[in-house]
Image (cartoon, rainbow, N blue to C red):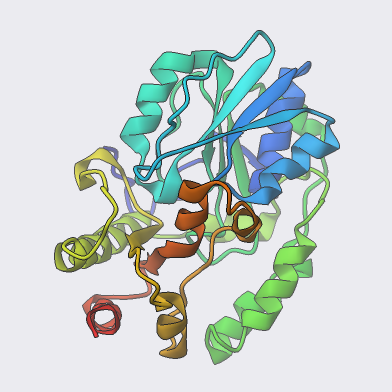
Length: 311
């Protein structure tokens, strides 16, 4: 797996830098041209549908299993494509396997896998704000970048207030602004990544980010693996995790317990909660808890999480 040298800047400088991850997907679809249909997992963020609706592209859902891997044998026709998710940034090796099967008819969703290396000639899109302190940012690979010259540059000052509040008053104080700013990203036109976002991304120590995330993930896994119902891949098969996915199949409301004790645990994805007829996806949405392991934290914070779970 690749290491990113400290001080060398953003690891995706060779990509097509746009304003959001979903717009990076839209850019890819526009570059492809006549897309007949898209296969995508039920277990995904509904914002992925935004560019499909905008471009009037039909879509078809497929199922995954508890290893976050496809369970259906899909044979896309000419003009059809499969979107495969690198869930939580821990499915790098599996995505490589899928690329060998589907090749040019696959689009990789790396919104949760900022540090996964793009596979040559495979269409891939990334989102930056889930990993580091920026308000927006997306990256596209696998298509011609010349069309990006048609777009204006974005302005992140319209949706970055939560970052300023968080820096001065803490994450909890900025949460309301964060929710409001998330909605401002809906249905945005494709623009180039704004200069402020690029400036921040170019000056982050990514080696440090990766090292801390992997250390926190490893500590949580070593301590909680006997309680975790998920079959997670070996750490040497991925570059850097976004979170540590932890699952319990009992009726305990662990998310509420953690949040009550000031440990923020995201909830992916509310649209899936309506799919109670699809038990695997519904269970993942309700019983898989993405435990934070990011670079702001260390062993002390990980021990707090472990203590709550063990209690």
